[in-house]
Length: 358
Image 1 (spheres, helix red, strand yellow):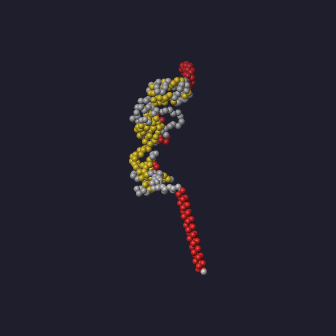
Image 2 (cartoon, rainbow, N blue to C red):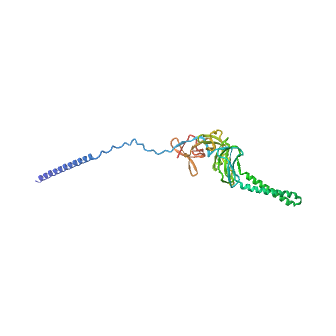
C-alpha cells in the first residue's frame, strides 16, 4: 500500500514539474515576442563611421635653414630730398624790425644784387640825420682844435681827436646797419620759397626766402645723431626716388656737428648729408622726397644664418645644428655683423650645415 502511495506521489510531482516548465517556456516565448516587437518600433541604428581617411594633425616641425655665404652689407638709412648744390636761405641780420616790402615771389628768376625784401628802418634814418648834423658841428670844432694845437695840452688835444674819430665811426656803423635793411640776391637763381609778408615782425636770422641755382642738383638727407659717426665721405650710397627707382652714388659731405647755443645760419647745405648721383635724371625737381641708404660696411663671402636661428641664454650665444641622421646638437657660435634678417657667424659653423629656427 505504501509503494502505491509513493508511486502516485512521484507521478503527481512530475506532472507539476512538467506544467511549471511549460509555463516558464511560454512566459519566455511571450517576453521574447514582446522584445522583438519593441525593437521593431525603435529607429535603425546608424552604421559605424569609417575613420580610416581622417588625417590627424601633425606636431609642427621647427624650420631648418642652410648655412650659406653671401656679401653682407650694413647700412644706415636717412630720409631726404633733392636740393641744389648752390642755394641760400636769405635772412636779415637786423633784429626786431618789420618787413616794409617784399620784392619777389616763389618761382621768380633773380640776378645777383637784385632786391629781395626790405625792412622798415625809418626810425634809424631819422637818428642818422641827427647824428650827421651833430657831426658837422664836431667837424667845425675839430678845425678850431687843430688851429690851436700848439697852445693846447697834448693830452687834451689827443682826447679831442679820439672823440671826433669815435663819433665818425658811430655814423659809419649806423649807415652800414641801415644798408642791411635791403636784402639782395647773392647769385643768379630761382626763388624757391618766401617765408615773410609785408608788415611781419622778424628777428635776426629768421628765414625770409630761399634762392637756388637749378643748374646742379644734389641729394641731401638728414642723419640721426647715432648714425652720424658711422658715415664718412666716399662711402657708397643707394638713393631711392619714387617714380625713378634706385640710383647709386657716393657720399660727398657728412653734416657738420650741431653747434650748441648761439645763432646758426638756417638752411645751410653743411647741415645735410650730401650724395653725388651722376645719373640723376633732369626730370627730378628740387624738393622731391627720397630715401638714402649708406653702406657703412661690406664683407664678401660672409657665413650667415637667419636671425631667427640664433639663440641666446645668459651670456651664451648658440645654435641648434640638425644632423643628417635627424639628431640635433647645440653649438656655441661667435657672431659678427647683423642686419634685420641675417647674422654673420665668425666661428662655430661652416657652409652647408643646417640650423634649426625657433
